[in-house]
Image (cartoon, rainbow, N blue to C red):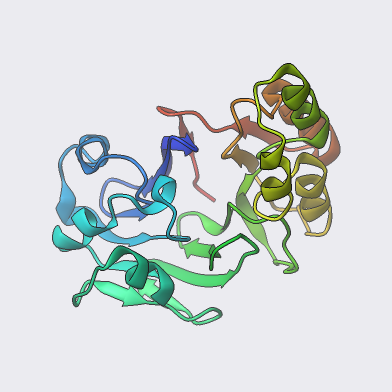
Amino acid sequence: MELKVLGSSSAGNSYILDNGKEALLIEAGISFKNIKKALDFNLRKVVGCLITHQHNDHAKYIKTIVDSGINTLALPEVWAAKGVTGSRSVSIEVGKAYVLGNFKVIPFEAAHDVPCVGYLINHPETGSILFLTDSYMCEYRFNNLKHILIECNYSDQQLMKAIQDGRTQPFQRERLLTSHLEFHTCKEVLKANDLTNVEEVVLIHLSENNADEQYFVNEIQKMTGKAVYAAHPGMILDFNS
């Protein structure tokens, strides 16, 4: 199984888990044309799409995906906000398990400024995958994780520097505190989980102005003893168990 990163920023988020026979889309924040290209234009292998919340950098192209016949999982609030209906638009319940091909997914509540979920994803080839973005905290603990994709959006130190330099507006700090995962909080979430079987940690949705990518990667690698990557468009990682 490969993880393909198509986008991982406020400009647009999209990821694909693909073993050549079946593929699971995660987020719909980049153009469907680019998603199709990453799939080698083989939509028949797509078993479904997971959406975390309604913001356009995660859900802008949700209607196009549904109209293409792909079963898409999202909160009821997302469907209402996007005005999308139909048999392919599946309204999810937090804590309920869903099966898409050989993928089993369980949404859990995230802490954002609109209704939002993270996903625990399992496939026989990968084991358990944690996907958490756009959440300023996480109260859940997960067992036997093999792969982690977790937001590390900003550090308060980098944010204050960006505000002083005029690259970030002061009012944005208040929103970030209650919408996105800060570097130290990301570390605390990782510490709270058993990482014994984890293969790698992928840091996602890093802020262009308020993050220090190399520092984040180095510090979390030192703390966890695991391979740590910062997600970039075009990145492909082996996610086999």
